[in-house]
Length: 303
Ligand SMILES: [Zn+2]
Image (cartoon, rainbow, N blue to C red; front, side, top):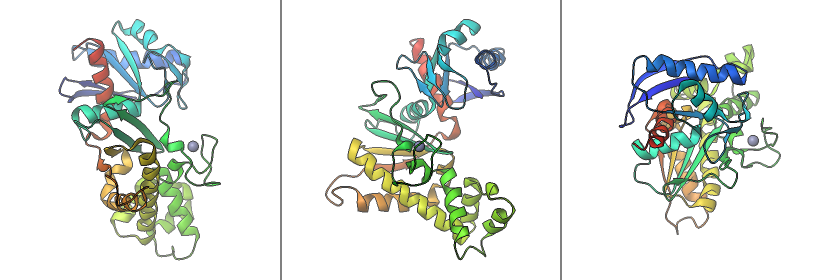
């Protein structure tokens, strides 16, 4: 887990890190530990916790988090009890989207779709400037919208989900598929696959694409097409004015974003006869969720 001390301008003043333990109690103790560590050096007013998981609409409890032990756990109250400070909990993509709206790429925008392309797709929706959470607090899960019937299996239990074709993981999977076909012999990625296909990661594919590797460039083009394709679905449902693309994959945006925009513009419903969403990269990088969680925490204190 990463923690940061964030000021009112959204600047991260200090950071701390800790391992993520497995059990509820150890997890809560670890969060309290990093807060205590930072509180020795700074005056902390309140704490925001961002995580990948389903958070209740009151931002107090975690219903389910795939990588953490919390199940229907009153996390905010438990941690507040340990540290003696107000605590708020938020989905990490929601927190990042709020930070981008307040301090980054979505400043001033009212209808925004935020996508964090990493291991999967983290997504958030701002409608009229407010987070949209759905009736039960679990919306949106755009990464698990099915784009390919009978497509790649997804850990969520479905198949053909958008994030299986448009994420760092997807980039690696596509490169391995292309290498298994013909024509991948000269690729620098071929050596990695021969040793262990698990060594092909999204980051390595992106690095190879930057160096002009044919297979890696083709994998990037595939991601670009699926990003554009998914955005046409998103546009049909939400008609956003702005799409912000963040997450680790966004660091390689020059390799795919223009192509994604073109595919989106050419294939969206009513192409050529409607206003299109602007598509931009996120500005706050990997600090976005920390900055957004801190902003929510600041609002708890009415400042
Ligand atoms: Zn899925």
